[in-house]
Length: 275
Length: 275
Image (cartoon, rainbow over all chains, first blue to last red; front, side, top):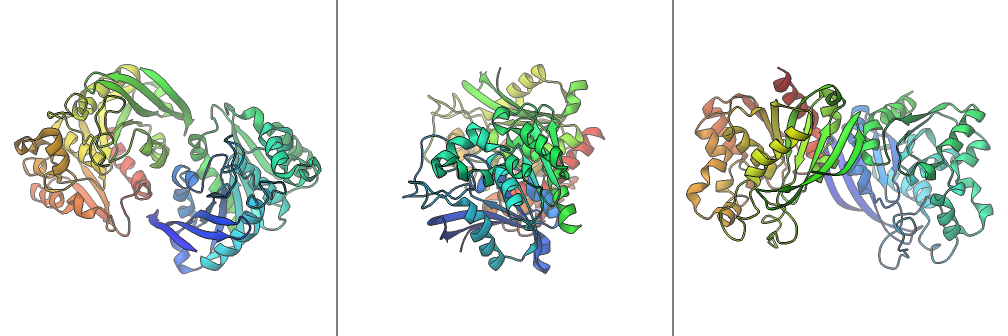
């Protein structure tokens, strides 16, 4: 693991690190914020999965999350959204290939060698950070934005017992019924019968998440039709899932929206992590 | 004036606007945050002047200022740092030409036609925003980062009675004795005898600012030698100037540093604006 940068930030340290990823067959970069409390021992962890076109850097610089994580004594991890670099396939569209890993393991050519973001975020990166930083891996929570909200919700439901709470900002809720999902699942996986375990609405219809869920989505989200919020809302209500879906008046899909509600989300996770 | 974008943000609106600038002889872009209170009438104004290489956008997306401005009911204005566009001269160096206006009016070729950021920020832009937004121009304060800290301090001292308070993050304090200053003043102005009114330390030695000053600079600022903090500190103490210079342990020159202390700075200005 190589240190790219470390900056003092809200009494803690915002670091950027790179390493060679076995599952993605390339070098991967991630951001990690450690609050001041990490000097005295392991701290709880909140994962933040980013959306389409983002790298590890967007949320790290624009979401304003460190202020609240520092207040709560929680570490933040910002993984990249896809493999990158020479030899890694890409597509001209912004929503396929690099920057659009969709938090799944590809099986189809040309994607399968590198596009394994599920295994990367669920297995390889947790093992790496657990070994190198003072993190309490028994106290983890997860959040994300848009495509990253899809990643957070599906990981929280699939990896039972791993995360105490899950939240999302304007998540893609029902990718198997959206152009943000069908296109990518089709390209990375082909056969539609593999898709179900990576659709938050379908997962929710088949069971619940053992913890609280918080979702914020703007009423003026310019991608609202692609998100399918109504399907997840229905599934959560039908399952009597503990949680809340908040439609925030006038907000769109941007980081101005994300940063506005970040304090609420981190307070929500802190309650679960310290509860 | 043309609206580039408006995003809901912390209950208010983060806008980006462009207009044709007479003094800079080109189109200029600026960001403006209006808190929710602006619906009910004019709100106080805090100017934020950015540093080298920045546009109107850096602080608007990375400083986390809207959270605290919303809490205090204060508008934020984020001007660009220089003229831009086709026909506007530039230099290969990051610290001269576009992105490096230094908040002065150039007199030398090829700069004098466009590089008039003093007149732009001190006169043209205030008149424009006062006409187009619900701003209480009797209650203004100013802050900035690095080159923008230099701009904030010199404007606050030169424009007597305009600003109730001034603060700065890692400001260039003594440009006439620094490579961040001598190079640019020389290029834009030539003759050294014109420089004095644009050096915060020299201005402070010749008088005081009628209000409080707050300066934060990191002890690990990688540009510390270029800032000349010690000269301004000495001048402020000699003048018995109301204010404080805080050396923040371990912090560098980045927006991770700026965002960490933004809450303090906005609370400081709120006290002066509402006092």
